[in-house]
Length: 489
Image (tube, rainbow, N blue to C red; front, side):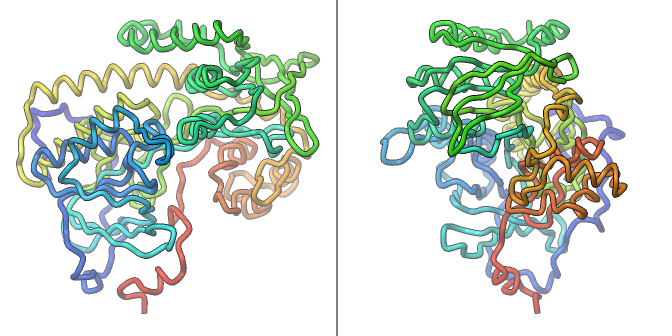
């Protein structure tokens, strides 16, 4: 599966550890369902990266199947309004016009990917639709564009009704034109907060404060990356102007350290932070509100990739992401990735990565070459946008002192109701030295979300960097699906 060496500069081979083929899950060749027709490329995820990859691959003559857990394409960034509202995201309309020959399988949540035992032949098993019927796709190559989920850092009262994720608040507004409240504080860290606050204010919510834990002056240390992306600076200026027009106060180096209310949110406490994100004693002030939209950036969703043995790396904000070469290939032959799985970077970066990956897959499978000028343009765009994304990640990396705002009775794992005191006791009294041991001793991370909400916090309290997601199944799967797999007997 060699790629055109003139198309995209190769990565340093030492930077991408080779995968052990024996470590990649494989199905019994005799047990592969013969009735499943094979396609050239299966794309998992219909956000910007997946859409761009599917459209490009189809244009290059590949038979493409696009699987996505959502009912409609676009992902979180290009989320459609609800069907009854009669509209769609304009960027998605342009992309979907290019995917006419792509087989789209909506409401298909891929829960595992396995080798069939033959070279470049993969089986993707999915749970389909509200009836949870089993579905299988067979492909010569797989592109993972599974996106990301929000990083939440717990605080006292974060389980109160009225406290929602920042991305969740934006999704409510995009899909249903619904506000999470009438007076909404937006808090956390990361560039998403600006967009959320300005969109909520434009939709009619009163946003008294945008509370940012980081300090925007950190961007000044990366001036070259900023200057190469004037469009990003203009976008930030537009959001800043919108906040001024709506009289939203910007509080940098501050955080919501407690939420208050009885049956639902009534107010939040905002505290000033030191450079390590430790709350300054006596700095807390209350802000009345009926909703809080909070989030501390995004975390790549890697379950399918790590189950395959794909190598990972640390991004500048400390989160794990996939290690990819210059052609968007993972360390497992036959598996490519694009979008947030490679590190959080936004829609424009995801689009470029999706196109680059599709062009390399077409060449690898059928020797189809693409216009080298287009490829060179995409490579330059990817480098420019990745530099800016790394700048953002470094500027908004959570400081180690945020755990100081956790009271002993604060629930860190909401599913299993595990408090900060129980986790700290597992470390100081019971001798736990990593998140896995804490999980075994306290059940933190064993609930419905499987650690997606609390995993980062549990790891920090255990004194280690958050590890890449490693789950044998990426979503709940009916036992009947497992029993019906060929060879299950």
